[in-house]
Each structure stands twice: as structure tokens, then as C-alpha cells.
Image 1 (spheres, rainbow, N blue to C red):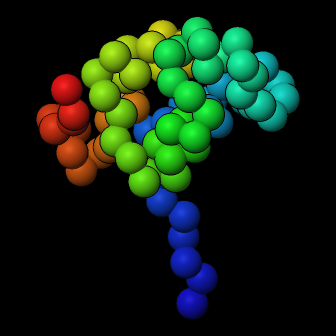
Image 2 (image 1 turned 45 degrees about the horizontal axis):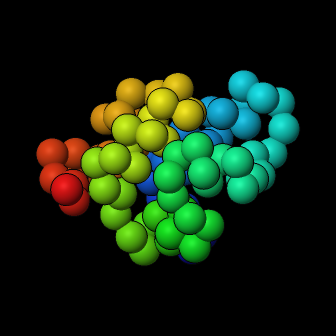
Length: 82
């Protein structure tokens, strides 16, 4: 039986961004500085090992041009770290 990958909101925002820029998204040092998140934490968040804090949600939503609610986990849309 084939296991389907479950995407989090950030992964979906990245996919939409890749379609928009017509290339694979590769975070740069400027990206990390702009959104105020380091490389290790960003990777952990993308892999669902860590939850985003409010300031990160706002920065990433702004960068990827998506509503903040799109980045929230669908099962916990009302619960996030402060």
C-alpha cells in the first residue's frame, strides 16, 4: 500500500511560490534574514518537527504572499505557539 505524503501549510505555500517563480525554491541567507528564522529552524518547521510562532507565521505569510491561516496546521488552525 502506498503511503501518501501529508503536506503542512508551509509546504503548500512553498509549492505555490515555486509555481509563481517557475523554479525550485532554495532559501538564501537573505531569505532567512528577511523572515527572521534560521536555516535549522526553517527545516524543522517544514518537516513538521517544530511549530511556527506568531512572528514567524506573519513573516512567512508575507514573504510567500499567502494568508496567515494558510500556514496553520489544518487540525490545529486555532492553536499555535506565542
